[in-house]
Length: 140
Image (cartoon, rainbow, N blue to C red):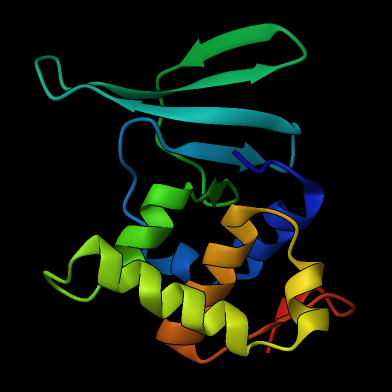
């Protein structure tokens, strides 16, 4: 899972954040405390939800709603689900992703250093027609 400052910035600036529905196990980043957070929600009574903070070996758990400033860090499986067209088979999705990677300028692809960064860039291209500008640190 990519937790680099660059990927955090890519997720923070993404319009996907506005539509994100929190699910159990989501990884979030709290830019205020610099903690990574796992979202926990229990489907059985008492239907509690909470967050589990961890960093540098310190663990904390608190029951509260997710603050707006928390940044969801999308896993590769979540990004693949966002890019998926209805019931299309995974092999077809992989073909589209591969074609997109091969059609990008080499300098752009080399800037993206993890599979999460590549998949996020692909999702942003497919859903919003945006590309990541590494110098400005924003989606254009």
